[in-house]
Image (cartoon, rainbow, N blue to C red; front, side):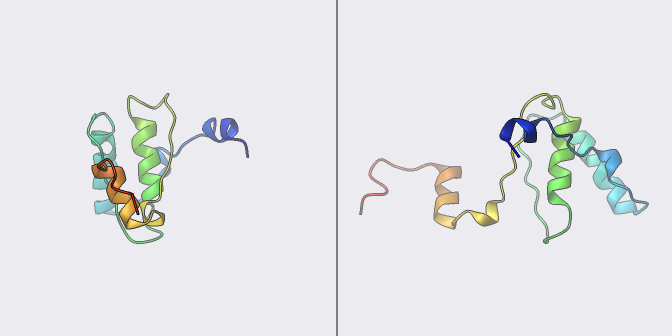
Length: 96
C-alpha cells in the first residue's frame, strides 16, 4: 500500500469501540475530552488492549482530524534512541 493510500484510510472513532463496560464507557468519554486538547497524550497498556484504536479515535475526534496521523510503536525503538528523541542530544554525544 502506498503512503498516500494509507493516509486516505478511515481512522477508528469512539463509536467503533463497542462496549457496555462502565470503565470502557468512561474511557470513551475521556477520548472525546482529550481529543480537543493541544496537550500530548501518552497511551500505554498490555499488548492487544487497543492502544492504537484509542490513538486513532483521539486523532479522528479532534480538531486535527484533517491532518496526517502517524503511528509509532515506542517499544520498537531502542531505549537510548527513544531517550534522545524525547530529551534531545548534545553536540558530540554520539562520537565514538
